[in-house]
Amino acid sequence: MTDTWIILGATSSMARAFARKLAEEGATLYLAGRDMADLEASAGDCKARGAANAHAVLFDARKPDTFTPIIDAMGAEEGMLNAAVFVGSMPDQADIDADPSLIDGTVTDSFTGPARFLQMLAPMMEERGGGTVVGVGSVAGDRGRVGNYVYGAAKAGFHTYLSGLRNRLTRSGGHVVTVKPGFVDTAMTWGIEGMFLVASPDQVAGDLLKAVRKKKNVIYTPFFWRYIMLIIRSVPEPIFKKLSI
Ligand SMILES: NC(=O)c1ccc[n+]([C@@H]2O[C@H](COP(=O)([O-])OP(=O)(O)OC[C@H]3O[C@@H](n4cnc5c(N)ncnc54)[C@H](OP(=O)(O)O)[C@@H]3O)[C@@H](O)[C@H]2O)c1
Image (cartoon, rainbow, N blue to C red):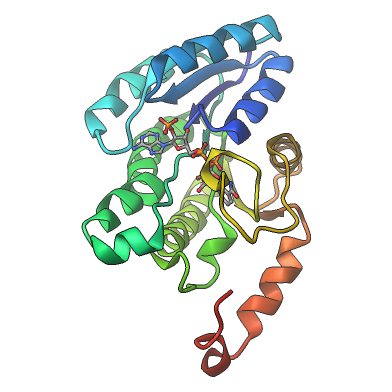
């Protein structure tokens, strides 16, 4: 019996690298997102790499009616059900400052949409007595900064949600890994200036898989972001509020 994984936000290059690694282990994959042509191509690639099966499925975090068919399909799979959430959006903070209505979509994409999906999946995981959820948050959720505080707030909400979900699922043998990446070379960060210590999507995917195997609770990827964020979190607020980092 193979493990089944749903990958939400499967067009992300981090997600793609993670799905490939799962495919090589023979998992059954549900690649979920909005770009069906891209997802179909990825599903073919995953099957060629050894996936037991790979399905492209429509998922839009802002359209909850896309969630139920996926939940139903996963319910028909045998064995443990697992989920990895890569969905997120980060509009320019300047655009959000000019149009506060952009907050809603940012929070839905990066927190409430995926959380609502996971709420629907959780009872099936509990029934089966196991499974893992990987939730990709961000170091941006560790402290609000002038440059991206709405995205950061959405990720902070998602981190807190994942912490509670971990607390819930552990009671039935399930597990939740919270992932806080630093800067990663992907579509989201394309063209952003001033990035440093940029990781590759493949490096992040490798860290994720290791964290799943070792049942880690919260990881920073690459690892040194734990120490960078420790320093950033310990800057006293009277000083921090004057910084532009
Ligand atoms: N890159 C970084 O430096 C960095 C750092 C920390 C955390 N992260 C997080 O890592 C995750 C992956 O991001 P990435 O860097 O790989 O960027 P990305 O390519 O922009 O990935 C974001 C993913 O979210 C999906 N998405 C956005 N809105 C959606 C919606 N309404 N419904 C369904 N899917 C939606 C995108 O799908 P479409 O292809 O359909 O747009 C895409 O698959 C995100 O959660 C991001 O916040 C990234």
